[in-house]
Length: 167
Length: 218
Image (cartoon, rainbow over all chains, first blue to last red; front, side, top):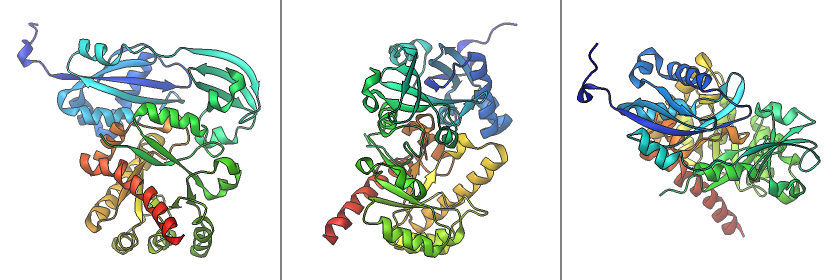
């Protein structure tokens, strides 16, 4: 079939996003979850209007494409994602652009802090095992799981200022 | 540019993240300030050196609510009431010592009617719009709660009740950027401009108003 001429094609906007997660997420699972959430919020017709697709995703940052008229709906759909395969996540939009090139240059060239695994027993501010450190952020698996169960997460989040011994 | 504020955040030991971690995450998202509020049963778990800025009073009866308001009004900057029960919602709106009525729709019905809305307007009680239903609930439960919220927002707009938007976060994974919260508020009949006020001017005015009241009493 002959391809559509550029003036007849749909116009898209590219939304750059950052993903915060407890366990790593695959691009395919993210695409499925975005579609599921959009469908849940706006229905089949809404999903077809948005025409949403994950263009790029490197594990922490990525680009989603949607119809130019439906960017607020996409932002609402991304904000509504709370879990992917029972793994708590948070999708934060960084910015919107008209081309992939501009979106990458403007929003995706910021270096992310590397996340590394540690294993250290802590007692302040909570007794447990510090398992991850990313910049100033430290994740702790607590002995008493009451608080994390209440918040529906796996880790207690602290910063280096809360426990300077871990630097 | 607006100074965005979230006054419904729950920090460790009630929530999963410490105040510093939440502040760091909120700052990265574009908030200029967050105010930790603790549910009243968890208040005593906080050390005296880092008491939360606000309290969200959980009460079983109206009498219990009044007692707790009297106890917390001198030690807390923001007095919120954990809504849901219709009698509690109405009692909270009747009391001018209350600053915010949080999520009144968590009961059987939407939680407020025209009488409650008029009382809230008269006593300067703001309606706390928790947007966490979008990512914490699913399908039918979500649609039911959002219908209630939409009705409450239209009542507040009609009677001039102040609305504040919060994420009701228990961890940094519950925080959302202001522009995302505005997009979600747009689905609840709030215009971009109204959502801006609900995220910036309204919560700031609550924090300032409380300080002015304390100064006047002194």
